[in-house]
Image (cartoon, rainbow, N blue to C red):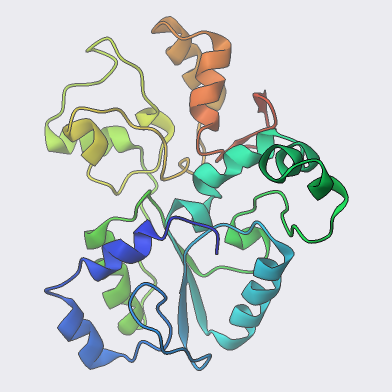
Length: 246
């Protein structure tokens, strides 16, 4: 679907493991890796968010064929960075990108961004921007064994402590680790950045409390909401909180 296809590149980076993978399965469609295409498959890994009616129709066809559907990365799992588009009116975007004539034209098939599970049922989500190579391999092996992959539901702060990182807040910064789903080994913080929330929220995030935390560490309320809105995993519109965040 709509994405940078970076998560597919992570799969391709499994150079050592790919021979073993290919000894157990047949890959019949992989846009970044092969030109051959087939619609005969049992498991569908889907990358990208849904931004057009054409993509929504394609997803429904995939769901009818695949026994198991797995989202691959932030764009497909939560909408990802593409959901920044939803802060604007579609007509504004059409005019800004394509010109005034695009507003009334039916040529431009573009809609509000949706995660894959807003269109079809999904069996498992692989989060991240991009996905974690190790997490992909573990999930893949579980699926081959007929098991449901384990999905972390604890905050990135736990991964940070395991990695021995000093807390971003104690160093005078601010991040989204306390409300973001772990499983990334806190790679961004480990390499000197902050947690941007690309893996989506844990199941029961206390968004209101975290906004107050961000404010205590120097952010205005709007800046705090903008941080939480970056991957649009629980907020909507122009900085307005959505009730019943999940």
